[in-house]
Image 1 (cartoon, one colour):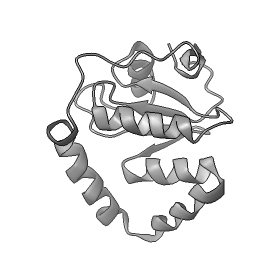
Image 2 (cartoon, rainbow, N blue to C red):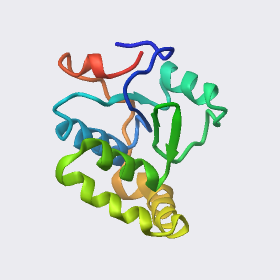
Image 3 (cartoon, rainbow, N blue to C red):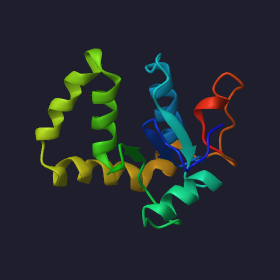
Amino acid sequence: MQSTTSIAHPTLLFDGVCNLCDGFVQWVIRRDPEAIFRFTALQSEAGQALLHKHDLPTKELSTVILIHNNQLYTHSDVALEICKLLGGFWQVFYVFKIVPPFIRNGIYNLIAKNRYRWFGEKDACMIPTPELKSRFLD
């Protein structure tokens, strides 16, 4: 695993007990054969350190966060940036960047608000398999 002090890869912070968030992480992993992305749960020590470093609240956060090239992305921008970084076919979805953020984020916030009710939650954060362990921050 990597430390939070030297992040050279796009890093996705996610709610480790949210089934929807876990599914999104798994979706990214399956489409990232180059293994460019790194991951950490918001609840983890590394996740909390990154939140603190970027002056974000460490509790009650209802968005995934992408940190890439010292830039912070939240809400619907995360999915769009990930599609852009995945390249190939997935870049076509970046066209949705033209949709005004208040519309994109309105839909995102509706889903985020109901994610536990609609998709459920886990008792604990996911534990990466040995093959994926190097892609998760401490």
